[in-house]
Length: 417
Image (cartoon, rainbow, N blue to C red; front, side, top):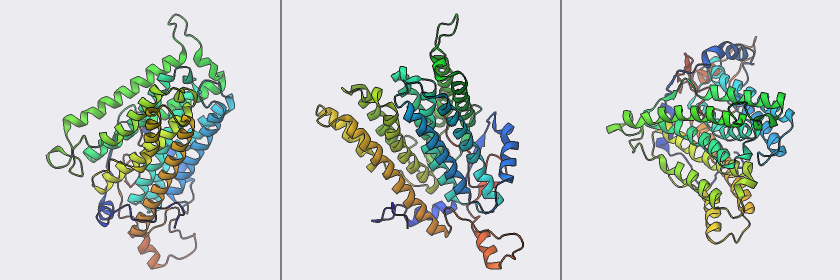
């Protein structure tokens, strides 16, 4: 049993586990880049050993992405100092590795006949964490720390839109990708890192001839345009109504109900940043975004579970303790240094997220009788025992159709930036 697991009670009820077993993944996509990248993904998965578990592929990609971003953050924690060019190149490579591995985990699941609802949940969970680090790395690479308000807007828009993508799925029962969506955003950010690596991060602060705007302002315009397209697609949900009874969510709740947890994360983040007498966001931008990003990742994971189990989402969460303390500390004129509480928020939110995810994965593994990072594998030349074959076929009961065709529980990517 994982050491970080909740031991006092089960997170998922018996009814939720039963609903999870019945869950079918549904997705539609109009992505421009996905069809072009299919040959690369198909070649890559063909080189992957059959004994390698899909969830292991997912977690390796996430670790690479997080580590490369943390290296970048160490050299420019506030997004103002220009990081070394090699750190930008490292981030570009890390994001490309993450994107590629995130795109083949579902293919590996189908290839090994080990699809399950746990894989989809694990994939979304890793994506919720990756979104935070990808957004921070992009802003640092193009020197957005010189414009704190824009830095806040871009990072928290990315975090909020990832949540909204799953909000829309919770309402309609189907995840929808637009023409300019997650894949396009990821490769745009890879391009930003590559430009910084070749020409230096300072290039983004230079003025464009005739126009008079700096290059990073141009990037802001394009990113904001992408955000706008995603918001428009998201708002269509309210006119179309939900897939539940009387236009409700898949759980039969109000389509507006998921707005409460998101508001409890974003609104305090904005108020604390704007009212801080110690300029906590400006001085410690990366720590601030990661701290609130972990809280957002926790509530996003709870929303994903609510969708997959067709259950009502809890609004309050222990991960909100850190933001609440920061807010109260400002109310009482900062009797505790804000940076202390900010680090507490980051540490508390991270451990709470990890404990929650560990316990949920443990409960699902026990219910489905599968392992998280191991799959049944019979080496070539060794006869397959009938019982083993039976177990392997049973593990595929949670499969469904994915956007690439065929049967899968997973999604290559799920987050708009």
